[in-house]
Image (tube, rainbow, N blue to C red):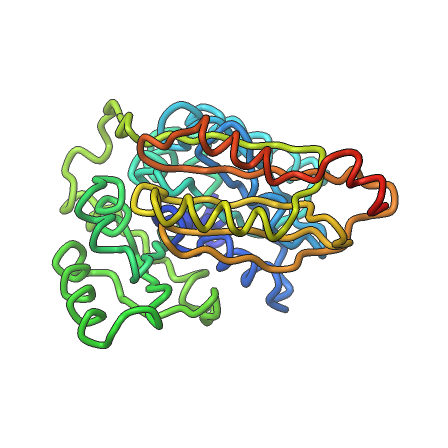
Length: 335
């Protein structure tokens, strides 16, 4: 296909909690008139981000769980791209571009490789750019501790700094200098809750294979990819509502103790006496929640939470969360 006829693909990457889903929601809400297919991958056995994404205009959301897009489910990425192509050509789906949101633990290099090493994929899809979000508050430690965080910055065509309001002007300059040292070719801009011009993200034709080969000469060679085994995820599910006060007290205590090792935690919660779901998210010591859409009349109410971190005491978290649930007897009084 001619380049102008190919389907452009944007890889949206960034370490855990940097704001990828917030930015993706911003893109989907924008009145740009474009039809977008979204492929998202989460690190863990259950996905949360799909429930957080707005889907008001029939966007095609494809979710891949239980693995990193750059290793264990890479074959799934090729398969899904092939299926999307087949459905598009058969007029079963109508989309103009694709956005791939990687897990925060992904090295974007192998993801980008897919578009150059698989002939069918490379002939149909055009890798437009790799956009990397960087959490300004926690970037230095993440860059120190995780090779993946450095790879995400190194492969970026655009770097978007989130949470800059949480650090001083001097700290921002120091971080910018570090990012430029890692990747001098990517423009760096601030982004506040995903609010950034779409021109900085889409159709920038920023991916330059020659530039990538300068960074990593072995880019087009197959390589094994390993994660830090100390990082793992676990899931908590409940069919009973939470007592909001108890839950906040428990989580605040756990975050106070284990915050440095809590890379990312998020979920969709059912709180007693609340007819709306609550979206819960956090990074290290920073935790927050927002009111989500109402529960449907016939919709089964439940909570699901995902925790990603280093050597977390899973049993202690699970037991404590169970104690924050409203009992069946209490539930009968409330409803």
